[in-house]
Image (cartoon, rainbow, N blue to C red; front, top):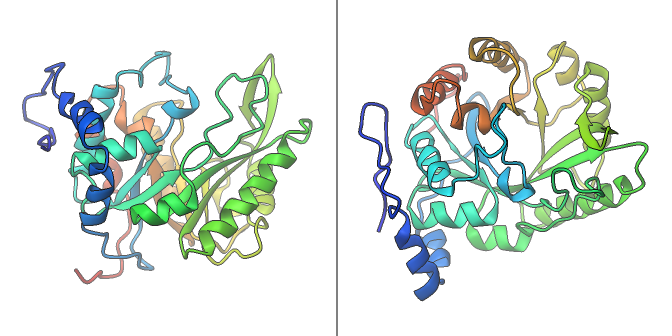
Length: 311
């Protein structure tokens, strides 16, 4: 059973039982997830000149449920699945980045046909955890992603020069990159230079800090052949993109400023060499005006498609 995606202009399905069949399948037929993964139609393939649009939905697995001023915006799984299906119904959306639980739901819903699939690998650095920088790999493994027919895995790589746990995270990231590369799967590395202030982790989004984080991250692993960077949009993006030859996707994060300002910053960055597209979650799934389809359509309009992709 699949749920018809909700699109702009159609009635929103607010039946609290609308995903009850997922629980039934998980109870009675858990192998259905593997069957859905095996039978799904794959994405036609990555091409230079055609930027990709990936929706991110791995925040809850790290205990990061907040969007803006709402501390539990992403807590309702039914609403999150609704919003993801709205986004994925747009043909300009190439795929999803998700934790295993959300990925399995989307597979059972048939929402990933023809899409790129990236699994979230390290979710152990829980938001607010006392040892948050010891970001252990508690999600997808490279072997599991290969079995799912996924295109790659993503790893958050926060580098705190004042925290000894950072070295363990760097080592684990390097091993994950090698494990993915050995299976010809993409390693999407999301690096930050980070600090702990007043008990909370803060990512340094200064231009020099982002450049330094890229320099460290792109040297991880015994090969970079399958490595991508996932970086924030900051000031002087020309300098940021000059720091790497790797395909790079832009992340949205929890935005500050108006939606128009955010989109304008993405548009400028997407015009730079080496930028392969967008990997954005909360900004588009929980827009201030509630119009998920509209936010996704606007973001899709910013992408550059200068090469034809054969279907």
